[in-house]
Length: 159
Image (cartoon, rainbow, N blue to C red):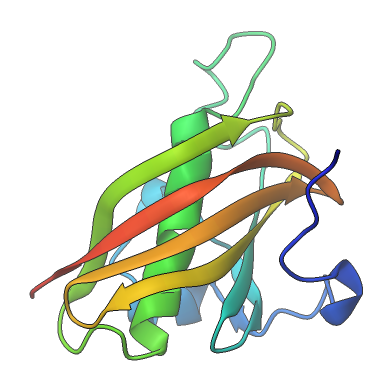
């Protein structure tokens, strides 16, 4: 049985960017190749949706794997972690500093993600211990196909 998405795809406009990469950089500390979010498409108190458009110029393409590039699963998780950080900070779950990756659980990679794809990540808020820990379920999609999912934990890191 296929998993349902946290948010119906008709609930947000896939082409209407609410926050672009510059706006994400105002919140998250990631820069250069490690900025793995191009934009935020939806954000509510419980759910966020972000994306990254993958190209042949993505830094991992040349080496993972030569001739048949495949987005590394760890980068899919990092994309979810960056959405988690943005979500926690903009929803004031952390007062000062930023959010770092604290753990991953029940991660599943279901379908390869390749250059030319738009990886859309949905995040659903879980348990929150303000200024300490944030948990969320995440789902990654290419189109409406679930490509990855799991649970992510973010920890508050001071300046």
